[in-house]
Image (tube, rainbow, N blue to C red; front, side):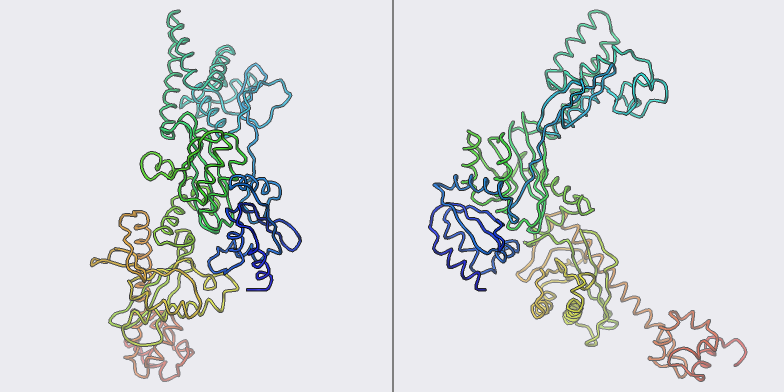
Length: 613
């Protein structure tokens, strides 16, 4: 422990056991972290004690702390409110910071005879009519898209009446999602009736709009305008279909927020679903770097998020535990002027909605990594199953292959972001002993692999990159054989085995503490099975290749003057026995380890039906 941390620890031990806020500053006096505490002395002194149990984010922060100050509060609620205020003011580097980009959103109705509807972020002094403001761009985009489909309004860039008859109608007309005024076959009055109905729908909502359309349809039928009544009937049917569609993202709890996180301590995404009237009306996502401890990050995110929002629902459903849950719920209730409950649903509709929210967070992260949400979520599930600290984005798997101890080899396959990275596959020939000993073979392979890491770690590529997870084909015996290698070389990488059943199918994951059953985790089970099959295929392919070369080498040793060394040298030089058989005498003489006598012997062996040389 350096002198600066010792000095800060000594100072922290003099703090009172009162609730309050502490402010960490760097050597330039900049605020780099603001936190709250139930008891200032206990909380602040933890930072300057042993660093072994701290997350990497906390260790880096502590390394940069030059000094700290504190403010005593009357209660934990007051400390939380003060913490939020100071974070907004100083924007500290090591706090979770959310950009409050919730601007206003409008539906614009253009000021022209053939009116068009569009989504805009600002009102302009252009004579157009505006519906709004709305705080949710998600709600405006979805509602506008629904209105255009229901009332068959054009979504193209054609201008009317200038573009009448200048081209064929687009696909939307043929799938009955556009009235196609571009054909020039509808009047301005008919078109604007569609627009007026769409505006009513946007202003009043689906149910209120249905009531008005029902009356219009009945009036048209009474006036014997049956074609017009049929068109209104179709719009009513479309609104009802849209309503049914929305039920897939609706909830029995009428007003609530759902918050879920996908990622690990190094970074991830918080997703927020907002339900109003039982319908998903808004969603937001926030990419967070350097998350640290997840339960603490959830708590910090919630306090940051609702410090920027006035409408706080009575229920907030979460995907996991949070720190200081009671304090946070109390602060939210005080801010919202009604009781707020923080829940972690375990089953039923609420749990399914939380899972959907979490999957969307995974999809958002996946987009930044160039993979799919499913590929990323299986890694997150694997992290939970194995109890890993971070998502295993880079996985190495190993298998041994031999025939009764001969041609003893190993294969290494690599999966990056759940996909095979074939450029990183490697082959090993066992060198340290002869015979069959899979444990010793695995020990040798991992020893050689991490010796290469020491040589190339500065590059961060190939063997110079540490995996997030190592999987061995086998059980506890393989783990026992390899674990000392990692410990001796100071390699801190999670190590597990892939256990097969009597039919050579994946059965479980082995750890040094026993076996982890994965049959009930279908996606993880399939993923591990694929890795085990792939590393086995790769290792046995290399083994067969070595056996084949060995067989060819044995056939060459039948030639007078050609022993094992010359046979291997010939194969290495000519690559195949066929090329050796087709080589000219001069080529054979020029090969490594060959002389005129042995070259003639080889030539004669493959040309015994030709004239003597």
